[in-house]
Length: 477
Image (cartoon, rainbow, N blue to C red):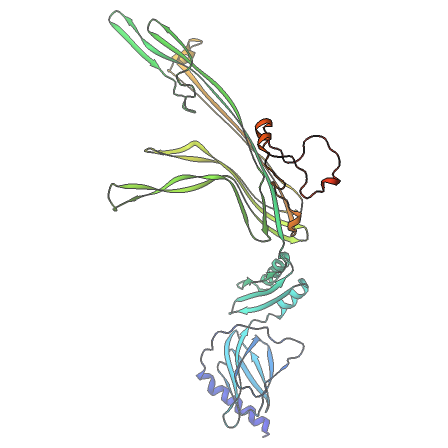
């Protein structure tokens, strides 16, 4: 029997004996396994410390040991195996996903080399696919446990990072969790210009006759009273109208017609990093009783706890720059206002309701392109007749015993959204509304009613200014 044959026989015997004494190795982070057409040898020069070694399932690595191998210890041969080829060279093979360790000893029992081995799934196919699909990226693929993959490194854009995540998820197969930890280099910023315009037209009509009096015939007396409730909208005419009295009967004609227009306009401008969200609110907050606090508990000395709810014109958007000048945009726009419809009154506290118009959409749009959210039209009509049964249906005379309450709401809301991919700008290229502002002198304010002086462009040389006529600059009416 040759010397190499005896070493391999001893190694096999050591594997059989020592595998039953194996213990669990600590969890290790996996590094990229050695790849290439041929496995490369691991060189160790006198360092007997345990080294970390990542391996893929079904992959092997060649190890050159600084000394003659007489004994090999494999903690768990089900995870990894070691085959001694020569007295100073061995092969370590990944068998299944897990962690284990391998030690090599000489004839005197001294440790020549040791490895903490983490066997993970073979990720070289995913690495190659990502390298071809995202050539400008520096993306690393790491194994995480038995069914996880972590993507790290950097990509040139959010689109490349998302594409790498989609490819890794597809190649990893079902049951494998892919964690996207790719950082985006030079993340773009998106400025969003939004115009929210709303026009609401309200028409209210109320018509009714209040009758109050008494009619007597002999010893019989008839008292009657007919007052208009106007249930849709509370009476808008109180103590006014045309009054007529005849023989103890008072008649009051209550008539009112109201038409109004409400215009709402907001033009917020927001800027956010690609992939992040930005929020805008132009409005206010109103108090709402959320709960009641009693001190001490169970007593009658209680006070309400108030929370505040937001209302007004709000905007929330999340942009993602897919490519140069191409933006994926998620927009949530809401216009709300306080309303008496549906309000709740508890004791002396009245909690108003909210009238809300909301638009939520996701689009893909070029930089500088505009999106119009239109067609949000609402037309609401309410009408109610109240009166004495039977008598109110009489021709002509029935009008004295009934009332009409009518209301019509017409609302149209339109939202214009324009995103831009923005770049930094120098401070000198920016201007403020008060640049060049100067208060007017006391005589000019008292005699001419001016609030500020006239001025031109800040920093402009007056000697080179062309002649002009009329008022220029920042003028307050």
